[in-house]
Image (cartoon, rainbow, N blue to C red):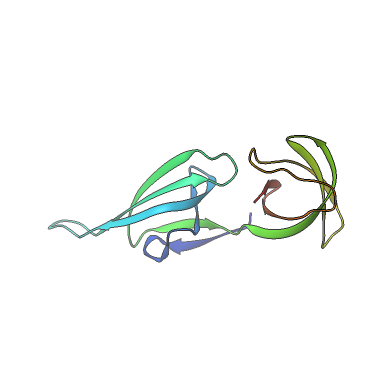
Length: 125
């Protein structure tokens, strides 16, 4: 699995973190000061990279957490099968992949795109 461990205090907004075994992008990060009998806590709110579901996480700032290593890759549209499905060729490996097109995107053949990949899951950005 392509992931590494970091302390919760090292996370930033816009970076990635594993929540409920799903890679998520951090939308907001806040900390609460330590109390009389405890350590400082961090509250992390994020959105799933591939499923767009909102998730929350509350942990001590010195706790270890898994951070996914999501690859950004370049591709070229080979064929547009329908309004929401396109075939994309990876520009490094020349592998052809069928991907779902995000709702607001309109692609045509020979367009160069950027996509995210993590453990066989792919998403056009």
